[in-house]
Length: 253
Image (cartoon, rainbow, N blue to C red; front, top):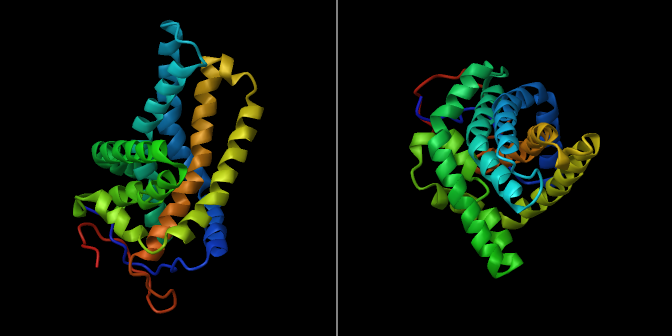
């Protein structure tokens, strides 16, 4: 299978409140799967990394620690995010989640491409943000579908940057207002996790646990972007199209 075919009914992205409600419901109803994939990728790796930092006497707080954690999160997300998107898309297709091993296998298949394109996305947003806040926001919106396109369109799309910009074109304001409350929710979730793990900044072990749990919380944004993406790619009326069973190697229409 060289990409995941979107051959099932999808709801157009027309209402921000509706999109947010659907995102929360999809995230909550599939939280065990989302958390399972994310923690399987992040928790063992971050524990090993934090153990290494401890042995090397890298302080658990400060610029160096933040840089190393950010780099580690980027590398691990390139595996976890496509695995989560694979599972949720198949759930939307036929109502069943795939085994974790299948999801992680798809994530491994996309890891290299995902890492490279995500790195380019982050650098582009950073450079735009250094100019002014507004260009940074525009760049973030234009490139918001990077992970989703790599995870779902896979081999079918080579120019990911142009593809995500073409999808976002004409929908920037709605995407912005959809992402704004999710950003606030993400910050609140981060505060709750850190509050529950007070002292994480001074403990390599707690930092690994906190980082892994925060990544689970951040997957709500991954879910929302997936639904926006599905709502923008030739949406089909929900009542007009019957669901089809998944088939390997079939091309997207």
